[in-house]
Length: 94
Image (tube, rainbow, N blue to C red; front, side):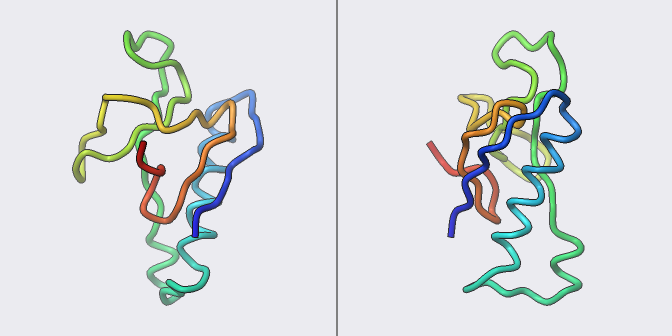
């Protein structure tokens, strides 16, 4: 299942919290239904948190390229603007 994040926010912390809540909702729903301990440990992603990035704007959501590095080809959404799909594996692919 994919969750559509529609809310808009003025600050990055609220936008990130909303994105994580949507991903956790997908992670803990059917057909996945992982156990409670796994649900508590889940939540991570890459969000641009600066106004000085030459390729992206503040709040842009980047897909993971690996466990410690984002894919910097295109944003998958923006946590401040909303309007992006996400599932428990992270931002939906392009």
